Length: 60
Image (tube, rainbow, N blue to C red; front, side, top):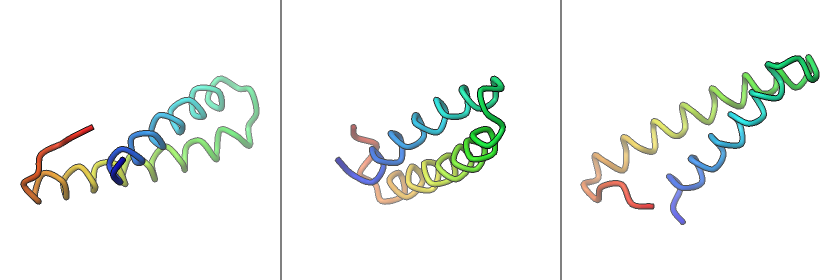
């Protein structure tokens, strides 16, 4: 599994953490989830662009 796959996994984990945190389960987890969500979203987009520019296409 390449880095793009790992970025996608972490993005899903951040979205799940955000859903739990934004729902009011715990205010501390909401802040952490927001940070993780945006960090992994940026990592995913950067790796996606790098994969497309490399010419290999996106493979899962």
